[in-house]
Image (cartoon, rainbow, N blue to C red; front, side, top):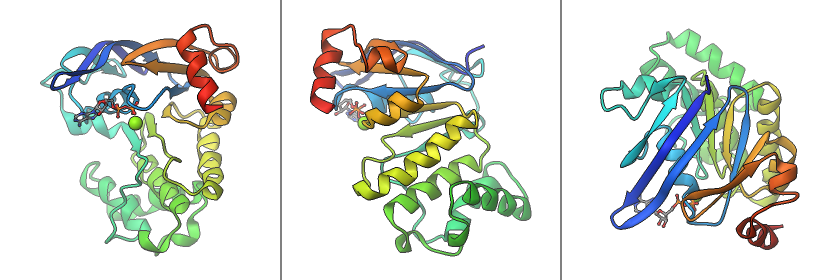
Length: 242
Ligand code: ADP
Ligand code: MG
């Protein structure tokens, strides 16, 4: 069974038909990078996977459970999916540790001591053990994004979604975040990553998906899609970003 299965997904905002029939799977342990021009529907696709957007047509299955079923228990379905955004979205009034424990205690109903232990372990994983007491405003963008990753990991997700996690960072801070993501991939985390970091996609992705105009134009191993694309639209896009 695929970890994520998307069937014939359509999403419109008013008259803007953004996703035009997406079929797509992510296998357990797979790292899939989604690339494509701005406005092609990459973020919308990601947001449909955890129902931050509700599609008009089509189905999304996560671990065999249809999360687009109107009767599904949303919190339970979402708890298995971690999401990291371009803007880190940390809680500014909570310190780093608390940022990583609050959803554990409220959504997963973990005891505070357990949540604390899990949070500390994940902050160590992203190299921020020293910053548990700090507040978001005291951290660099790269550190804040690593807190956001630790926070998501603390929910023990089966799947991690990343939406351009390094796009808001100063160039010298991008590397630390990519290093953490590379490590997660090596540990076997299933990841769906929207990114403009072609070197990262080339090195880390098992599969690259190129989207344009709300459809998947081509997908395959990075050496093919980035290294030797078949479709004219892919070639055009890569010529602009590489
Ligand atoms: P990408 O991430 O590839 O840049 P998006 O999925 O963000 O593309 O956006 C695709 C299209 O959907 C754009 O035309 C955008 O303006 C539109 N769109 C995205 N989110 C919304 C929304 N919440 N309301 C209205 N239009 C939206
Ligand atoms: Mg986007």
